[in-house]
Length: 166
Image (cartoon, rainbow, N blue to C red; front, side, top):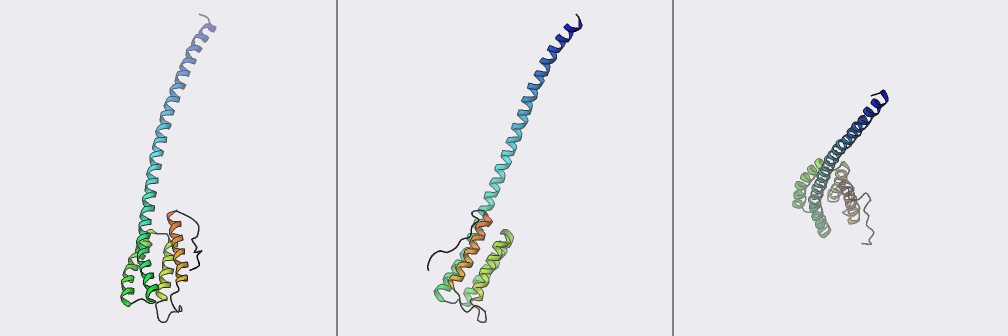
């Protein structure tokens, strides 16, 4: 066997071995890539589930917070003023609402909530700079609170405004 024959025989075998190794490498890298894709998809699904759960919890919190506010507003609108019992009951609820919002809501939501509650209290106090409760002012403050809640949950980024005539 001369040198040329030896190189061609060994070269052919080497080419076959290299081709087999390349194919094996492609299969292994494909398996590894598929495992990584599967892992990332499951992590993404888990994060999506956590985000939805978080949004749902915030939505439920915001519903809970809005109920006493709307009830109190209805009383103010009907009677013009609140009784001491109404204020005392709302004050207990307000403390709980404030704590819940401070823990779970954004600071913007908390700020709008306190602005709204302060306006409601100030409109009921004798020596306040606010003469009386004005529903139009309350509505603007309430819509700002709702807009911040929507932003916090991620529903919408736009500001809610009242375009009616009442």
